Image 1: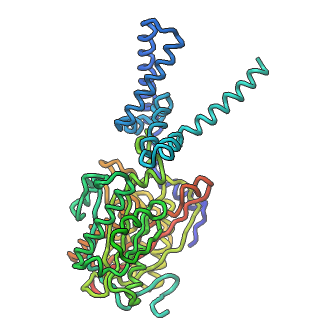
Image 2: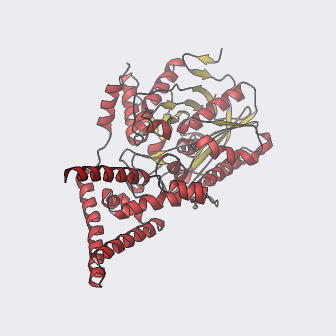
Image 3: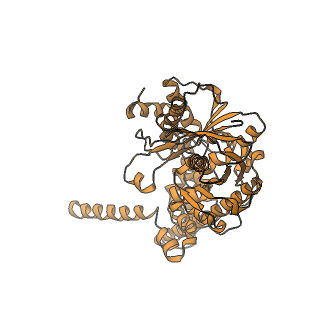
Length: 145
Length: 337
């Protein structure tokens, strides 16, 4: 009996377990929320110390990025990511992880072709399309405001 | 073509004997349910080397050395080394075999490598072109992740159907002399592609190839369905092996408990968090050279069919929207001729 691709696709769909969406969403919400709440605490602290709003924002971002890179190097962030999914990918810490992880992985291929070239393997597309989107939105804003 | 039968099978007239087998694995495999069957468990996933690639080659070198030693031979007595792995340009095998200075065939069959190596190795020995041949396959979790997926430190989640690449190497020494177990027949797989595209469910992509080669093997050689004590597919995993079973049943082959999967055996999927199970060239190679060889030697298994399975895609073809071509090779191992 020959089976068609469509029939097989049905079989595969029936056989594969589904991701547990509700539990995953809850975990992502908790961890993502905790990261953002922590950042807000740091923000409030720094602002109270007398930094301007703008400087505080920059400082908080820098602190989060450095912490995430440190946690990536200590092999903590990948474990957090396994638990939290989007919860630890979406915040700025996830972006830092996406840059640090390939840099560590490809260190053995040298400073230029390894770390330098591979650092943006995952984050590169985000930067490219993020920039492109901001240009398009900026143009729309210019004409319709 | 007196040794060729049906569509894709060969039956050996002078079946080569397996005179040595060795399996060395990494730390995670050493915590799994088959730990006691492996010759050596390395606590160091780097195998005292600097990179994942070097680690795999060192693992391969050590395993071949041990298999040859267990066969009571010296490296000079090996006529050919046939080896496959998952790294680009077969570099895991190439650098591992470099120091032996023996004639070498690098094979690419993805995770079906040990089936391919044993089948071809047996043909070489049966054909009288060699006395002793090493068939080998290796894989390394970290090297495979780097080659096919994401950096290890990236915080992502694995799909429920994803498998875990085995860090391990299985080597088998086939010889024209010996008292068995014997490689008695082999069926070479064709490339089978039923349009699967999900690289996180490779068991589904390979299951049709496994079912196809098993059917061909039984039909070509006119074997009764209860001929083998065990039919072990390579690395279909928990879900892929169910698909293969279903495809075989639909074609009238019901092997029941005899049909097992190396990928489903090697890890404790619940406690070791390996999702669908083990995969990689080292999966079927270590499970055969370690676990099944022991059972065959002890007489617990008298006849078995090993069916290593491979997904023959590359990162580039998948990015270009291609489907995953599957392959499987069947090798029969029997205690007596």
